Length: 226
Ligand SMILES: Nc1ncnc2c1ncn2[C@@H]1O[C@H](COP(=O)(O)OP(=O)(O)OP(=O)(O)O)[C@@H](O)[C@H]1O
Ligand SMILES: [Mg+2]
Image (cartoon, rainbow, N blue to C red):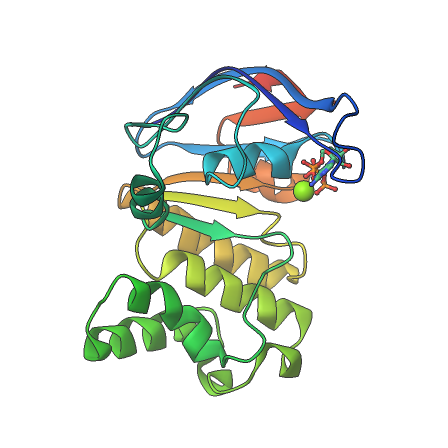
């Protein structure tokens, strides 16, 4: 389950630490049951990425209550946060692949951190890279891949460990229609196996093709839920 209760977020400006920070998210409340699927929509700058950052513990709220997979995010220790993060797959809007690692090693990284065996890693990483159509680019580094291919590596890395929660930030932004469709098949398959999924997107055609409840934010407020 993911639960937000009256959550507020401010970003401080490091250049002006004394200045009062602007509210980026204001009074956000919603709940996603285990195994739920939600679209997250809203204009550019509305706060979608900020909301997702709270979900994967990259930001802390100024106010409010956040429960992620049964853990109260506010009072979590560093150790517990690291354990919780291992159960969350994240597709970053800007990919965040490690430039010196191959596609294979980028995808293998979370499994290595979780100390899976190399044969297991080899099987799972090859399978997921095949699914996203990158079986013959496994050894390429990110800068040798197209934007769409980099995005597919980022997606593969997020799902390879079968996370309990998948947080995807504009995961089809660099994909063509056919690849976007294939990605949604992957995500919905994972969702049917029990993963809770949140996908931020501007692609309303995709939202219409895969109907699910929509969290809509505008200027930091949740204006629609359902
Ligand atoms: N690290 C930061 N420091 C200060 N302000 C930030 C920071 N990150 C985002 N913001 C501001 O917070 C607001 C919400 O940004 P956010 O990235 O969450 O929007 P978004 O809905 O994801 O937009 P997009 O659709 O363009 O990805 C924007 O006004 C943005 O400028
Ligand atoms: Mg964003």
